[in-house]
Amino acid sequence: MPEDSWVTCPRCYENAAEKLRADKKTLIESWEGETEIEIEDFEASYYKSQLEYDRSSFITFRQNYKFYWAENDLIKWVYSGGCSECGLALLERGEIKVHFGKKELKG
Ligand SMILES: [Zn+2]
Image (cartoon, rainbow, N blue to C red; front, top):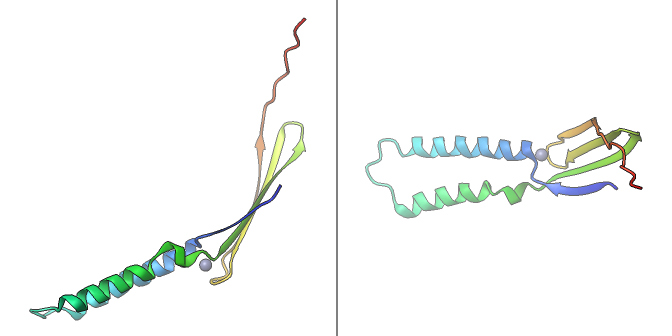
Protein backbone atom coordinates (compact mmCIF):
# COMPACT_ATOMS: atom_id res chain seq x y z
CA MET A 1 0.00 0.00 0.00
CA PRO A 2 1.54 3.34 -0.95
CA GLU A 3 2.15 5.88 1.77
CA ASP A 4 1.86 9.51 0.78
CA SER A 5 2.91 12.37 3.01
CA TRP A 6 4.04 15.99 3.03
CA VAL A 7 7.25 16.85 4.86
CA THR A 8 9.76 19.68 5.18
CA CYS A 9 11.74 20.01 1.97
CA PRO A 10 15.43 19.52 2.85
CA ARG A 11 16.62 21.78 0.02
CA CYS A 12 14.19 24.65 0.76
CA TYR A 13 15.03 24.41 4.46
CA GLU A 14 18.78 24.48 3.83
CA ASN A 15 18.40 27.42 1.45
CA ALA A 16 16.47 29.28 4.15
CA ALA A 17 19.12 28.40 6.74
CA GLU A 18 21.83 29.76 4.45
CA LYS A 19 19.85 32.97 3.92
CA LEU A 20 19.34 33.28 7.68
CA ARG A 21 23.09 32.94 8.30
CA ALA A 22 23.81 35.55 5.64
CA ASP A 23 21.14 37.91 7.02
CA LYS A 24 22.54 37.60 10.55
CA LYS A 25 26.05 38.31 9.28
CA THR A 26 24.79 41.39 7.42
CA LEU A 27 22.86 42.51 10.49
CA ILE A 28 25.88 42.17 12.78
CA GLU A 29 28.09 43.95 10.26
CA SER A 30 25.57 46.79 10.03
CA TRP A 31 26.00 47.33 13.78
CA GLU A 32 29.79 47.48 13.57
CA GLY A 33 31.06 50.70 15.03
CA GLU A 34 27.75 51.43 16.75
CA THR A 35 28.03 52.14 20.43
CA GLU A 36 24.32 51.81 21.10
CA ILE A 37 21.70 49.60 19.53
CA GLU A 38 18.04 50.07 20.30
CA ILE A 39 16.73 46.88 21.89
CA GLU A 40 13.57 47.12 19.75
CA ASP A 41 15.67 47.15 16.59
CA PHE A 42 17.67 44.18 17.78
CA GLU A 43 14.61 42.15 18.77
CA ALA A 44 12.68 43.01 15.62
CA SER A 45 15.56 41.92 13.40
CA TYR A 46 16.37 38.83 15.42
CA TYR A 47 12.84 37.49 15.82
CA LYS A 48 11.91 38.24 12.23
CA SER A 49 14.76 36.05 11.00
CA GLN A 50 13.83 33.29 13.47
CA LEU A 51 10.24 33.20 12.22
CA GLU A 52 11.38 32.89 8.62
CA TYR A 53 13.39 29.85 9.64
CA ASP A 54 10.44 27.89 11.05
CA ARG A 55 10.49 24.33 9.66
CA SER A 56 6.72 24.29 9.29
CA SER A 57 7.07 26.99 6.62
CA PHE A 58 8.75 24.49 4.28
CA ILE A 59 6.33 21.57 4.18
CA THR A 60 6.40 21.52 0.41
CA PHE A 61 7.92 18.09 -0.22
CA ARG A 62 5.51 15.31 -1.11
CA GLN A 63 6.93 11.85 -0.64
CA ASN A 64 5.60 8.44 -1.49
CA TYR A 65 6.95 4.98 -0.79
CA LYS A 66 5.80 1.47 -1.43
CA PHE A 67 6.98 -2.02 -0.49
CA TYR A 68 6.00 -5.07 -2.51
CA TRP A 69 6.88 -8.72 -2.86
CA ALA A 70 9.09 -9.58 -5.72
CA GLU A 71 10.34 -13.11 -5.06
CA ASN A 72 10.13 -15.56 -2.20
CA ASP A 73 12.88 -13.97 -0.13
CA LEU A 74 12.97 -10.49 -1.58
CA ILE A 75 11.02 -7.36 -0.74
CA LYS A 76 11.33 -4.49 -3.18
CA TRP A 77 10.71 -0.84 -2.39
CA VAL A 78 10.37 2.35 -4.32
CA TYR A 79 10.60 5.87 -2.93
CA SER A 80 9.75 9.06 -4.76
CA GLY A 81 9.39 12.65 -3.71
CA GLY A 82 9.15 16.11 -5.11
CA CYS A 83 9.04 19.72 -3.98
CA SER A 84 6.52 22.12 -5.44
CA GLU A 85 8.74 25.13 -4.60
CA CYS A 86 12.33 24.33 -5.58
CA GLY A 87 11.75 21.40 -7.94
CA LEU A 88 13.81 18.86 -5.98
CA ALA A 89 12.85 15.42 -7.29
CA LEU A 90 13.95 12.04 -5.94
CA LEU A 91 13.36 8.51 -7.16
CA GLU A 92 15.05 5.56 -5.49
CA ARG A 93 14.47 1.81 -5.66
CA GLY A 94 15.89 -1.01 -3.64
CA GLU A 95 15.57 -4.54 -2.39
CA ILE A 96 15.62 -6.11 1.04
CA LYS A 97 16.56 -9.74 1.40
CA VAL A 98 14.54 -11.55 4.02
CA HIS A 99 14.78 -15.01 5.54
CA PHE A 100 11.54 -16.53 6.66
CA GLY A 101 12.84 -19.92 7.70
CA LYS A 102 10.56 -22.90 7.91
CA LYS A 103 7.70 -23.28 10.27
CA GLU A 104 8.33 -26.16 12.60
CA LEU A 105 5.55 -28.67 12.42
CA LYS A 106 4.81 -30.48 15.64
CA GLY A 107 3.30 -33.84 16.02
ZN1 LIG B 1 12.06 22.51 -1.95
